[in-house]
Image (cartoon, rainbow, N blue to C red; front, side, top):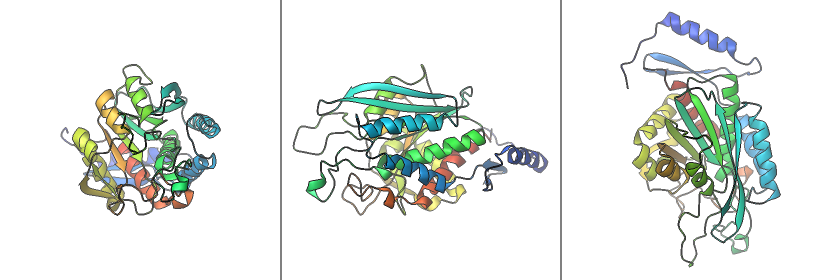
Length: 337
């Protein structure tokens, strides 16, 4: 990092007033001011009620499984909603073959803010839900599609709320929000021979075929299972291997935002999630903010891939902790030279 420049209190006052008066008059909540070293940074206030509503809207469509009516309706909802916040929305349609031989019609959805800026942050989450609750304690549910309220919809809900706020408060850097499809149509853990790369099909496709030729971002942040009550986000292995400096940046920002208790310094095992392919194929250093639960056999959220991954288990405080942290990262970027 270059030598930090001190900003006079007078200059900061003018900047702050300009930002406040440029804010949408409909925003009732006051902006957050985060102190980073000697600089006060304006950060919009994350609305957890709004984010929760975006999560619920997805769940209300029903399980967002590939080739389903709910998938089509939800994809249209994303496109229409994001276009309210930016004119730069791309729907990337493609077909992929699943582990069971089925051809899946899929859609990655990308929204860009301030595309002219060369310094860019990529935020992502998957939006599909798993077509079978194969981790449910009741074997009768193993072929039942899940709502995926936490596993998918929580991250997307946070990112739509961030999109709304970015439309009201232009950020100092460009931001690209990517919703990946067909992440959760992976091969179940059975006695059958395991096939490579059956998960994360949408991010694999995007990493090989980005929405914009030659697309690059300075770094990326993936959200996965970020809405459960009292969630703990540890420093996951692939994130540490590819982007330890980004982990440090985000975890420190969480502390400044007042949500450091959610972000543990504990190192945990590697998870093959969308960020692996973004790192390996697209070469964008990307971390995964994903819940770790040491009390479960899987290490994931206790209702992971069960019929109980529903809206009743989404917690607004956790949504806010993650959303406010991301906003802090975005609005602090490029403030110190």
